[in-house]
Structures are given as structure tokens and as C-alpha cells.
Image (cartoon, rainbow, N blue to C red; front, top):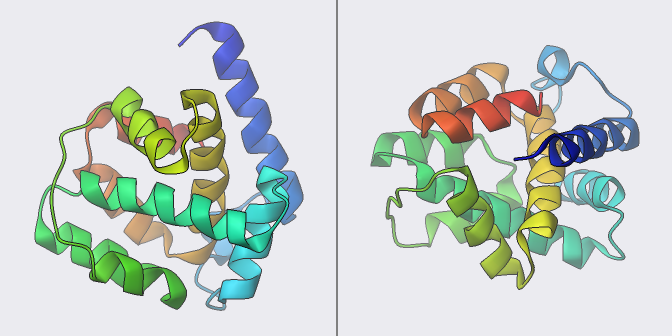
Length: 160
């Protein structure tokens, strides 16, 4: 990715944190479980989306792609278990599969689910991951990142 793209992504990440009002998500992620309304409101605000329905669509597309990165059923199960309740059901009902994807493949998968280009998929990933980091434990985030492809893990860690 060229320097201009990285700077734009960093700016989007900062905007996501500004919208959520928190900068140290790991320190308070497990304080109170995030409910559906709060989660979607944060994604909606961070992504400047017009509705909670769009925020849910973004969340489901990003999380489906992330779950498909899980290298085994145990990683997948642990990750899904940590998600806010309303996001668990669609993922649990989905047939398990592991797709070998790098960061670009992940963006293409998210983009295909949303019917958009990679830049919009990157925006969705940035915003949903930022809110997700606030809603599940730092240990689970670290565990998930340790099990996905290195370039994806590095990118997700850079969104912290």
C-alpha cells in the first residue's frame, strides 16, 4: 500500500476513535458488555453511515470475513463466543470454513459482501474492528491475531 493510502487509513482509524470517544479500548473492553444498539451506533457514527441497518450490514460482512480467516474450529468458536450476542447467531449458523486470505483478499471478501470497492471495505474493516476491540477482551483480540495470517494480524494490530 502506498504512503498516501496508509495515511488515509490512519486518519480513518483516528476518526473512528474520535467518534467512539475512547482511545484506550483495551483497558476497558470487558467492563460492560456492549449491547446491539450501542455497538451499531458506534459503527454507524465511526463510518458516517446513514442507518443502523447499514452498520449491521458492515459488521456482519467484516465479522464473516474475519471468522473465515480462523485456521481451526476452536479459534472460530472462541472468537464467535466473545462477540456481542446479536452478532453470534448469524455466524454460528454459517457453515464453518477456513479461507486462506492475505490482507488484500480479506478486503476483497468484505468488498464483495458489501458490493463495494476495496477502499470502502478498508473503511468498514477499520471502523468495525475499532468498535469490536472495545467490545471484547484484549486477550481474545491478541489470541485471534496470533492465529490469522501474519499480514492480516499486522494490519489489525496497526488499527489499535
